[in-house]
Image 1 (cartoon, rainbow, N blue to C red):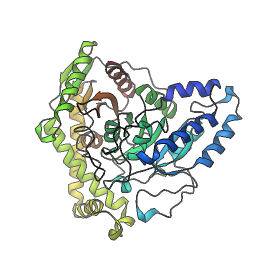
Image 2 (image 1 turned 135 degrees about the horizontal axis):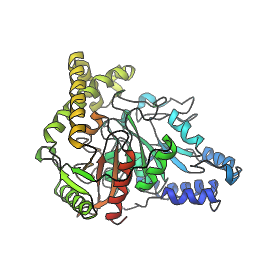
Image 3 (image 1 turned 180 degrees about the horizontal axis):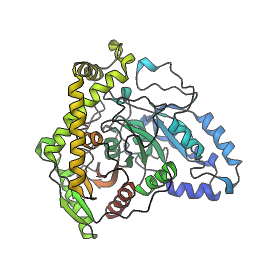
Length: 422
């Protein structure tokens, strides 16, 4: 069953700011859509309808001249991110009775901007591999990806126009690509992580899901403050991964098409030989993630009988990694980051956001391989929707840049989105 139908954020903001639509109307529309399709998608751990309607009523009393940028916007919050008074279960039986005493810093920030929390969205267990019940809104037989499964699916199905995720390996990029929505993975440290249950202090980053790229630009502008205006770069370096990365034919061909369209639109597009470096970064990423996760989640790691096999294996590997191997991995990442900066000379990278379209079956959330290198390097990315393969399922591509190039990422993403006809 196909229930795909994202809800554009920009149009809703205009309606809310002008008073054409009330905050209560927006929350009502969100609740109606959740009621309509949640049985198919299973994107939510819980929906706080009473709390959302109460917050909307309070916002409706604010005069238009005093409204904040996200006034009345319904949002979904990944269930590793604290919302005061709501459970933070992290997809684990170990957290079934945990209720957050206060909002995470990110949630508090968005509330001050006028956003309304609709509830908590499904995550894989502690944002790792073991999936929840969520299905892909394009076809319920397919995975939505993970770990931010519910947030990506909720946006793709039009339940909310904005949802929060997090990424340690590919937890935002892959579900965005699989579900056919836009996403922005911020650089680690761009947003405070207080109130977010993470896996790696080095790798964890905040992410956002919306219907389109311009929606993401608005969220970035109001969330981090105005940035210098940046046009799309004059040069894009396209990484077409080799056979060891197992990229499907339709993903490879649509990536080639994206490069050709960008070139015809006036950008210089050149290839990027990155396979060797990417393989080294994948290994370094896995080392850092395993080493840090078992130490950051040391309390949970003591209860192996209550953990899935993939998470037990991650913690087991983390315990075997010596500090010198961890330090060596961090050194390798620093050296490769310096090499890439010199190689790109200000250009952006265009690459697949996943190996293929979303696989059939809900027992797995797919392979994070194609985002591990960028996450190891701590680089911001933007996932662009629009491409679809012969199966009709979405195929997402991503632009990658360095911190400070976010404006260029959004500009390039908007350009490619328009070339795909969105």
